[in-house]
Image 1: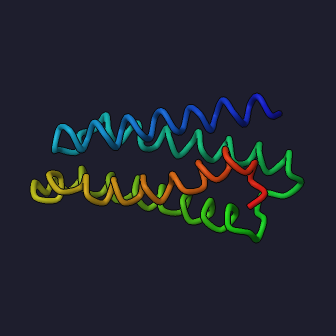
Image 2: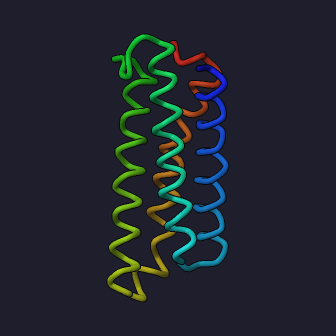
Length: 122
C-alpha cells in the first residue's frame, strides 16, 4: 500500500508542477494544462486515500490533515475553474489564470512537504 501511495503522490507532484509552471511560463492556459491539472488531482486523491488507509483514517485533525484537505479542495476548485475558463474562452481570464494556479500550487506544497519531512505526523 505504501508503494502505491508514494507513486501516486509523487505522480501528482510531477503532474501538478509541470501543469502549473508550464502554464506560468507560457503565459496562457491551454487544454493540455487542464488535463494535467485533473490528472494531478486524480493522482493526489488516490495517493492520499492510500496514505489514509495506512494511517487508519483518511482525515486526521492535525496540521497535515487540515492543509491536505484544503489542498485537495483547492485543487478541485482550480480544475473546475480552469475548465470553466477554457469553456467560456475568456481571453483575459485565460491569460491571467496562472496567478490562481501558482497560489493553489503553493498551498498544495505545504502538505506535500510536511508529509515528506514529518511523515504526516504533524
